[in-house]
Image (cartoon, rainbow, N blue to C red; front, side, top):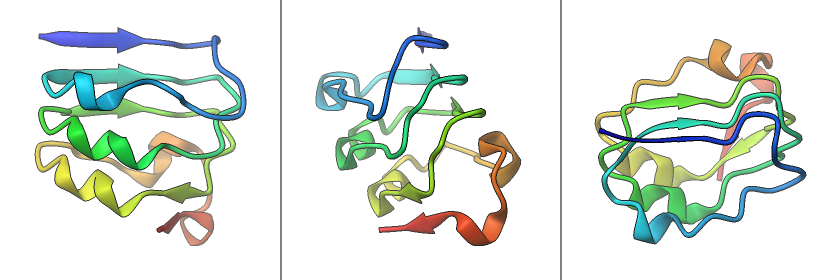
Amino acid sequence: SLSLSLSLSLSLSLSLSFASLPNLQTLDVDHNAITCFPVAIGHCTSLTSLNASSNAIRVMPVELGKCKKLMVSVSSFKILSHTLKLL
């Protein structure tokens, strides 16, 4: 299984080349200052786990819906459900 942990390492945006990570299953980016995910996150079609807690995320790209195996709860983001929006 392919996992990537970037906890405590990023600022305002996540700028990875997700197109080159279609087999990524676990992405851990908690405790950063991420404000949004790039639309290319939709290329990670094997993604099953996403931990983005303790960030400033308010908008998630609709392309995240292409990650059919991913189960995300709003509590994973530690924000109120009415502040999370899909683009």
